[in-house]
Length: 260
Image 1 (cartoon, rainbow, N blue to C red):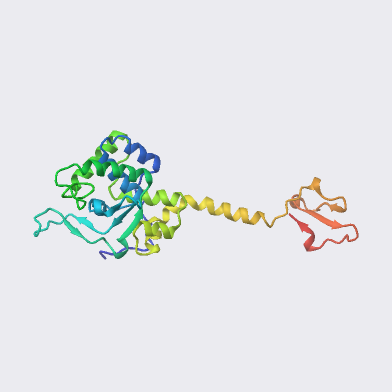
Image 2 (cartoon, rainbow, N blue to C red; image 1 turned 90 degrees about the horizontal axis):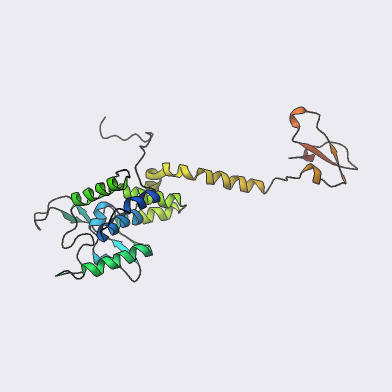
């Protein structure tokens, strides 16, 4: 059978940058425009087409937000005679307004001040481009060059979006918020795509269980037992860790007298 996805098939490990790897990757990029582009991919989780379709009018510097409302695809447009086409985002949930980190909004403001000096500049211009968005091949080549210069693994442009998801999940972000931030239609989509990343959070789950369980366990050391209690040692060799605490007036061993 073709075009069939086995729901039980083990998912392939996806490539992504950790925060430390991304900082190493970014450290070799001197151009402000590319620095902003890669940071927007990594910290905002945009898709490639969403990033290239981002216009200056989509950024609110006062509220520190960006709005995703269009997408650039590599399909020639006969009407505009361009080698790309502007379309709506992937799904209705892909329309979203998300906050921008302060350090990134500061870099974008610097980039805006620089671009606004160009002849004919308008807020409808593309953030990462000008009248036209940056070419996809140019962007990919820049990414590959930076990875080589930084000695980092060469991941796809889309893998920066996965890197954003890993950063949020590994930091303990709520899965509902992660789904909304990435523009997923349902939480299931986020869980199915990034469920393997939660493997790193399993130790946290165990710690929660242990912390809750300790509240119901009485850890009384033998030397701190009250004098009014009488200790009767266990006769079984394999019960060395258990002791019987019996009041003076009651010498029978009952089930409730067994204390861990």
